[in-house]
Image (cartoon, rainbow, N blue to C red; front, side, top):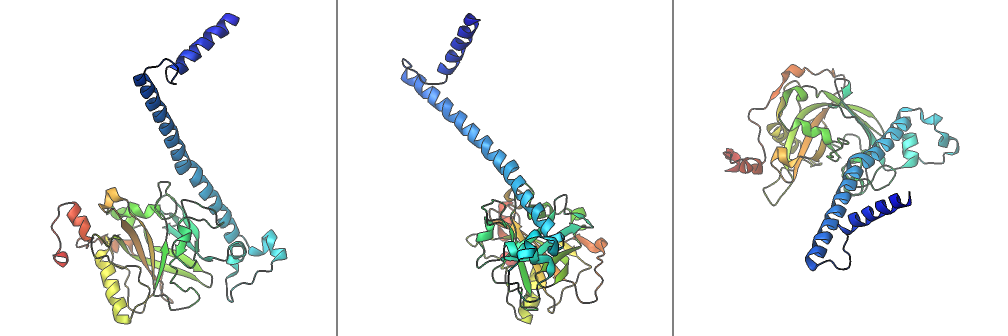
Length: 334
């Protein structure tokens, strides 16, 4: 048995000495072994990063999301913290937000986006929407204020949710992630896939003060890189009536699809959902995939005739999109 252990020990030593520099190695051999070890460390680091990025972080993000959904969809009076509640709530706030607001007063709404009663293309968008004094914090922080690559869904800091009728363009930002969380699945629409576009009908946004339904009327790909071309400012929040009517026309002209059953007028309010685009599919290094919806009017039927949703044959894409593919520029860019 001792001889066996000695034999195994010598084998291990030989194996290690073949990759670890030892006394007597030539300079060339040292360099070879160091290069090999560096490659091993890089490989291990890359695998660890992928596991964290694709498995561990998404699991954490999903776990937080599940907890928040329980708080939102459960009667707030059943929350154990309700018994010792000293929180001062905004006047007129919906009871559904009490448990969330107690834990983070930055919460401003809840977004639910499904397609004909199902999760959006296989991934749930059923999340709180945050807001703070800038558009940076919730890019990298979750509801619990922990650093999270997935960040949170959040309103543009310029939107005032307490000012009823003053938000002609509510804007919500969300990440595009390999895990498919947040707004990632919007990019499945960037390929001009009509059967997916026809699944887009309505979405629900509850602010702290009211529940709203919106009808989707545009899906755009825009360029956010001002160094490449004049950008289309789709995140405007202030308009005159004339400017708003022109803005709606500009949005429709840039939509990949024509949602023929959804009209929009200068008296309407709209909701803009924005995420980063996939460069390989959109030919844009700094592109955005944007969904725009119109608030349901009082007494309006929420039903949408999806047969009237068709491809927009005259869609206006960013100038860089044409240049990257060697396509003829539309007249507006010439």
